[in-house]
Structures are given as structure tokens and as C-alpha cells.
Amino acid sequence: MPSVKYTCTQYREEMVLLGLKRRLSEPALNTEERKRIEKEIKKLEAQMGMD
Image 1 (spheres, rainbow, N blue to C red):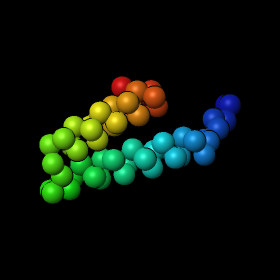
Image 2: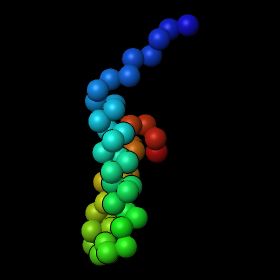
Image 3: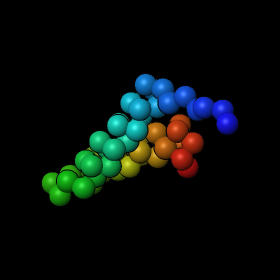
Image 4: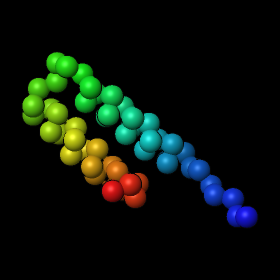
């Protein structure tokens, strides 16, 4: 069974994604900022092959 390498870049991408998702749960977030964060999440998920 081949081992799959988990890189620092992948870890970083996951942490950025988690941070963005956490920010979406903030109640004081305005509509413009929410849309920007959602767009960034979609971009990052596509980059990570999660789309």
C-alpha cells in the first residue's frame, strides 16, 4: 500500500479553509464581507479538489 504524503501546503490550505468557515459564523458579518468569504471558500475548495 503506497503511503500518501501530507504536505505543509495541504495543512495550511485546510487551516485557511477552517478559518474562513469560522468567520462565516460571525453574526456581525456584513453582506459584502460574507460574499467575499464565500467566494474565497469556493476558490480554495476547488484548488483542493473538494468542489
